[in-house]
Amino acid sequence: METAMKEFLVQITTSVPEGTDPAEVERRRAAEAVRAGELAATGHLVRLWRPVGELRSVGIWRATDETELHEKVLGTLPLWEWMTFTVTPLTPHPNDPGGHGTAG
Image (cartoon, rainbow, N blue to C red):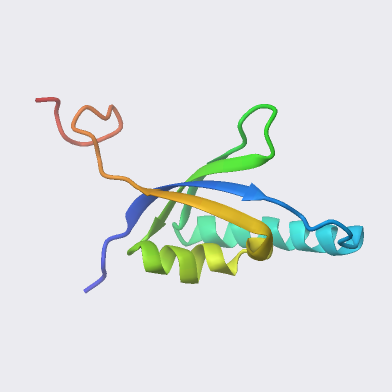
């Protein structure tokens, strides 16, 4: 039996260490784009935004639990060691216009 995935709001701030070779940064960013596509294809990465004027990302991610999210999803990102994550578990709101329930 397959376990349903839960949704998480994840804020990611990436800080490249000073003195890092620009070629290394570019290599990792290219690999990051590939990995994000793979995670989207498997249903782990749902949506991703960048707030205007900021160097951080905000996204909706899915995993069976927060441990899997950190270890098997976010932990597989090529830039992960330069990233700081703020994770908020989400639950459907009864008034969600995208949900399948009805407002009570």
